[in-house]
Amino acid sequence: MRILLVTSSARGHALADALYRSPQKPELIAVSPSRNPGIRRLAKEQHVMDIMDFPKLIDLAKKSTIDFAVIGPDDPIGGGLADELEKVDIPSVAPKKALARLESSKGFTRDLMKKYNIDASPQFFVLTRHESGPSGRGNEDEIRTILNDLNGHYVVKYDGLKGGKGVKVSGEHLPTIDDGVAYALDCIEEGGRVVIEEKLIGIEFSRLAFVSGSSVVPMPAVQDHKRAFEGDTGPNTGGMGTYSDANHSLPFLTSDDLKQADVINQQIADAVMKECGEPYKGILYGGFMATKNGVKVIEYNARFGDPEALNILPLLKSDFVTICQKIIDGSLTQKDVLFENKATVCKYITPKSYPDAKTEKGETVAFPFIPENARLYFGDISENDDESLHLEGSRTAGIVGIADTIAESESIAESLCEEVQGPVRFRKDIGTKKLIDARIAFMKKLRP
Ligand code: AMP
Ligand code: GLY
Image 1 (cartoon, protein in one colour):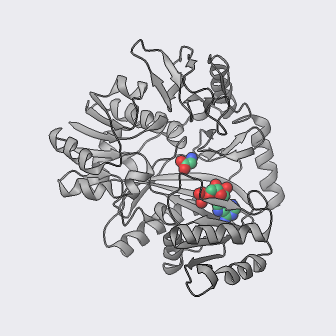
Image 2: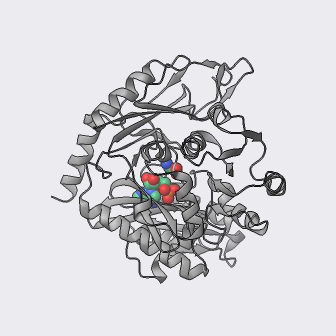
Image 3: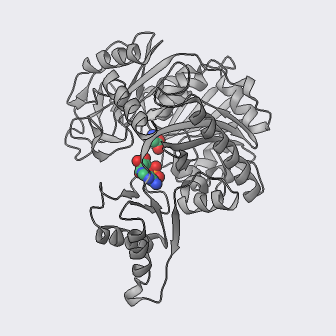
């Protein structure tokens, strides 16, 4: 069996690892924008090419007699790679373009939720370009009124894929109403639409699921840490680290929170199938916030999270290749998916100056021996012919500790991260008791 793995980053390495572990012994034909040392060791072939060059990709897929494709990142999924592969009879574990609008258009998702009575959105407004105003900025008055009506507690979202950088939050990135108006107008100018939302207060978590039409099978819940520095400060990043618990929930959630998230994921899968007239097949990533008034949707993604995949995939006891086959043929059920009851903590090693600069690019980095109870997944890193490893500009590698408790997993990940040699850093606080206790206390205060 031959699987086309379209990927980049540590998430791609984790996907390759999960496929490689299959008793079906698939051959992986990996395509990525740069040579990933982890994937190189697992794949039969690794092709370095632009993963948005669909004609070239299709050509390679046809020549390689591929059974099915697994597509990791948002850009090729949002751009419709699954549609192109289907035209040459290669099925994908990834939704087609229309269904992937769950991620590629925030306005689509909010409108879908409204249309299908999925009651988990904050107050929201989807505005499209209004040409009548002075110099094409005709939405200004409307935007100002909305931001004032939300009492200055708002979030402005670019309505398209922007590498996780399209969302700006009042008080954090947008200090004044004028800043909010200016950013919303920029979004409209660039993309023709903007989404403005009420700013929710609560704690975020990720609940991913394997989806095949109306069959929605949840994975362990994960908490991500997007801010660059300790104490959740600094700019947003792709995610500095994550943790999951042995019971597959999170310490600050009630079982009802998790049930609500699962019901919403099911409703979304059903709604998007009805709306698009075909089943969603792939990974559904619900980004939620537990609030005073229940669980709300922050965003949807049409793919595995990074780093979430690094926590989830090592725990998968079932054969990932079988899960992929069942997603494709529509026969997936809960009993096909078993996860170990272990806790995980993932910490990302990044260049010292990440995310502000790329001053360490090219410098050598070396990793310690990785024991059985840990994983090392390579991200934005390059490998020389002598197998020495060098930093690129973005997140270098995820180190995951796996144990019975979050505390033990944290200490495994932490001590391995300490041993990495090179001009790198990581967030020491992710997965620590202090940080988790603070989350529990916050939720207790929010809903006594
Ligand atoms: P998104 O790309 O939609 O996940 O947004 C990025 C980040 O912005 C999220 O992880 C949240 O921290 C924040 N965010 C997005 N929407 C809201 C909202 N309605 N209320 C509060 N924070 C939000
Ligand atoms: N962990 C955030 C994301 O993958 O979008």
